[in-house]
Amino acid sequence: MDIRVKICGLKEPEHVAAAAEAGAAYVGFVFFEKSPRNVGLGLARDLALAAPVGLAKVALAVNADDAFLDKLVETVPLDMLQLHGKESPARVAEVRARYGLPVMKAIGIAEAADVAQIDLYGSVADQLLVDAKAPKDADLPGGNGLAFDWRLVNRKYWPAPWMLAGGLIPDNVAEAVRMTGARQVDVSSGVESAPGCKDVNLIRAFVKAARGFSEEKLPPKLV
Image 1 (cartoon, rainbow, N blue to C red):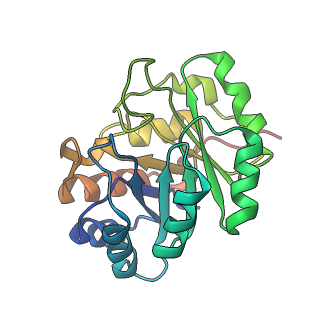
Image 2: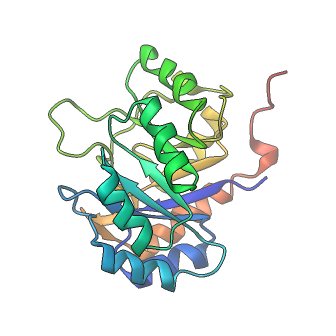
């Protein structure tokens, strides 16, 4: 099984194309005004329409209300919604039912106690994004370039498919996969030359490093 890669926080058509050409499975568009990766609905629609067939388009929203999500889903052709705020399990289930789209819920991990959220949200979300927990004073809920102790999720198998994020770069993604057994990885700041500025060469290098880590090199599943 190939490692599936998500390149998040895209704002330029050439970066969407580069992600697709490199072999990424997902691209993510951020809808959070404080983020340097924030895009408007019009730009996101153009980017999504230009994306090659088969490339999954994911919208990242933070504590968004129905009014915004209604406009988002009506305007932008999407394959998945990513909830990256403090949404409750009930809210995740509500969004999933309302829009009929798969929902990915981000989980912030900093210590062992945080891991319990994975089981909690795994029962209501289609996928989980296991990310580094943002510092209390951080302006952004993700995309901070921080990693967490991968041993906390080492060779764990959860109620829903999951994706590893947080501090991943081309030089460490293969090791992260080896340590955790993750089949999917997400990157944003790790393929940027400056905050919000994606780098085509880094995108290519990241996908190559992640997908070059073959199934045979993954740790065996626990029975």
